[in-house]
Amino acid sequence: MAAWKVPAHALSAEARVTLWRSLQTFTVTRIVIALVLLLYLGFDLQSGSVSTDPAAAETCFAYATAAILFAVMAARWRRRFIIQLGVQIATDLAVISLLYLAAGGMPSGLGILYLFPLAGAAILAPLLMALFSASVAAIFLLLESAWQLFVSDREPPLMQAGMYGAAFFACVLILNRLAARLLGQEELAAQRGTDLRVQQAINQIVIADVGDGILVLDDGGGVYTGNPAARRMLGLESEAEGFRLADASAFEPVAQAFAAWRAAPGEEAAFVTIKPWHEGGSGRGVRGGRDQPAHLKLRFARVDTSAQAGGRSVIFMQDVSAIENQAQQLKLASMGRLTASIAHEVRNPLSAIGHATALLAEDLHGPAEVRLLKIVSDNVARVNRMVEDILQLSRKAQPHSEPVPLAAFLAELKAEFCEIHGLDGDIVWLGDAGDATVRFDPLHLHEVLLNLLNNAVRYASRKPGSIRIFPSLDAAGRPELHVQDDGPGITPDVRAHLFEPFYTTSSKGTGLGLYLARELCLNNDAKLDYEYRFDQSAMGPRKASGRFVISFIQPRSG
Image 1 (cartoon, helix red, strand yellow):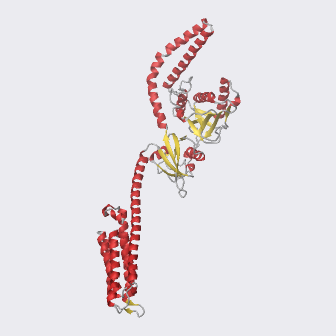
Image 2: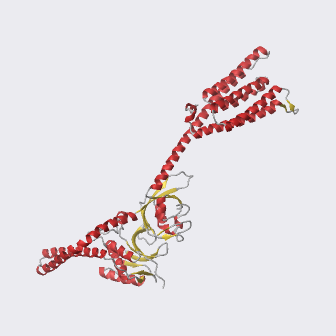
Image 3: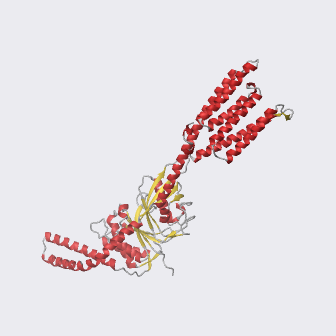
């Protein structure tokens, strides 16, 4: 038997349990056969009395008793498997041989009983032991038939005895090979199961310790499971499972990004913003909350499963807020050390250069001189503007918040902006603000929106409605103000550094405008961010559309 080529102690625990369980089944079957033989040979069923052959009855009774003892021993004392099996098979062969002789030999038909112990030996014993048992049974039948030549007048069934012997050997060989293969398959399955459990344990450690969030979803957007990093990013207190993303208002951006990816699986990573939320305002089955917004980079992957298994998808989430804040803090630390020297060492020489340029412009009128003086003047103005922006950073503006009616404020701002840039009025589209009111310093809000509109007009197509300003409400009911244009949009790589000081993609910019706008919003308990949204107000084809979003605090009552 192939499995018995391995030492018994090298078998897996599952294989040893299987062998002992099979031995117990073997002993129970022996009890049933012993009781049937006792009824058949020990009693006369027609008269209802004890059989006239007391030897057969005593043999059957002893066999039934031994069968019960074997069953108890196999269940209670799991030691010496081969010895127990060998004793049981030897007892079976001896009892069946005695009953065979007592019943009259081959004509009794009891030779078929040899298949029971031989089948057990073929399944549970090594091949050599099983073949030895078959040879003992076959030789006994042949010897008994040969003995009939000397003691009986009738011709003994030698051919039938030979056929029985051949059947015994064939049965042993076939069953032994099948049992060896089954035991080998179980051993392989046990080894694969052990490897799988080890791999699962490793995966759990890696997934639990990895910094990226991992969410497993079904095709309907239901959360199947998630790692601790995902729960931390989403603000969940309990296990990340048992709810649908679409049912949780705080996670609506993630649900929309997932739905958009399922509609177009080839799309690249999506960027979403999870707004502050608290338990009770997010949806059913969701416990937890966030006090600060989280900017998440989402990547999607499809799990290959069989047709019978439910579809699974994986969302990999990376919190880019920490990366942005770290880069911003590093730049702020460098900028703080630089501000004082710039204010004193650059401003005065810059004023002298500007004054000298103005004096030269009065005396020089040639085209070349005028062009050179204009270059000097423009760069002096640019450096002076940079100095002013840096000095403004060091002087934290004190807000004077008051209720600001958005409809009137935006209409006035639109008229001023179009006049400054010489634009047609239909280029800037204002959404219906109704009677919406926000709490903000009007001067600060004016400066923030002018900064955003100046960026928008630089990239917009200047077609009617190419620049849009419209109010909205977030998932928690807080007011927002969106500024959007039909330009190419900001790529994710630029988005990661958008609000860092001194970062700019324009040769004429200082890299401080958006940073100052965000600081002014923070001073007024608001938040300025660039978000990718999936909604019907997006320009162009339905996909993630970027826009600047100002999130206000709730207006004060009264």
